[in-house]
Length: 467
Image 1 (tube, helix red, strand yellow):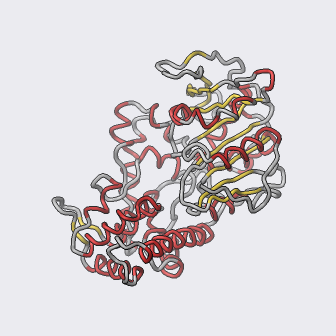
Image 2 (cartoon, one colour):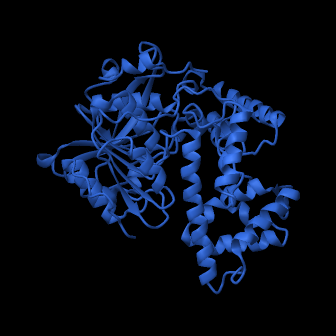
Image 3 (cartoon, rainbow, N blue to C red):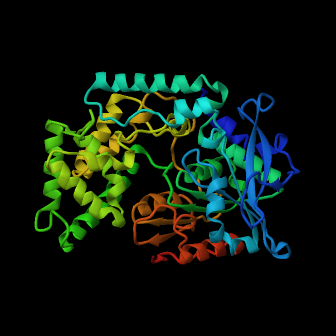
């Protein structure tokens, strides 16, 4: 796979590596098949498949914009990435056009289909890699760890064969260089970036490579690419414990909860111990859920609107049927599409050795006794991958203050990233939600973010946006 990025090559990209390859004049046209009344427009930007070989094979990136509705007051462009990794911003932006109505009075709102995004793979790639992928697991010894790494590598190699050069250049540093090519093509001297979810990793990667090019950066409900395994585990443990505590409190206050009057935490831990001894079957299938499987499968239920489902899932599992836990994963154990892993694993969300994994498992037993397997298991789909864009601290001294926003489920993580840049602020949403601006349409968050993009004004530290 692609060699790791060196410090020297990164340093060469501090000011406009994209200039030689990006088209400055974009041929904007109505997006094909776009059924919208707001003038959604599309164009293409050509970039190198391998940014270390800029004169080699090229890749067309499809970009789209919602143009400014007041050209006389237009400041520039805001470029949005919804995350994934690999999600196309084009459909996301179209679906959320109402949420950027005020922003469009001062900016074009731009997005793109990232390299290797789900709409851009061939049908063969989609079938082989987007709809399949390695399952999460919890290796108990060196042999199981090695076997999982070999299994992951075999699946990656099958996907890589379909587009080898592209597959080897899917890390977020490559996405960040694409983003700078888009900035150049838009004719913008500085970037206004809006990264949601895994789009935060692209934003951090961009800030490392092109700090002088950042005007504003808004990071909403993001993944942390700045922390060590130890620090990331600590933050995730605190966030997940808080979410589970909320469910426990709900159950104690809700008459319909089947566990009301019981020690909910003890019930859950007993269920995990039972599943550890003998995995709990899924009725009508050959599946059976271990403690690790239950911990992973229950995460989508930890939003307030799904507490009743989680209660029913636990009740059924106590009676020997784990079927309700399979609903978020459509009848399968939790897994990860291989196409997404081409980015995520290259970005360093993995363990190099079994000793690293066992250290993470020990941290989980200490920090999250309600989820002793889930956190270390999150990175097992990336065992065996080469890391080309490693995680690490962000040097914020040359960056302007950034704005973050997050619900309780991602607040500590988002604050951690923002803390690397002096003067930055994170808006708190006290509920549980992923994507406060585009997905939730929270007017308070939208207003603060729009003001920040417009005149770089940050809200006061400690700002809270209610539901």
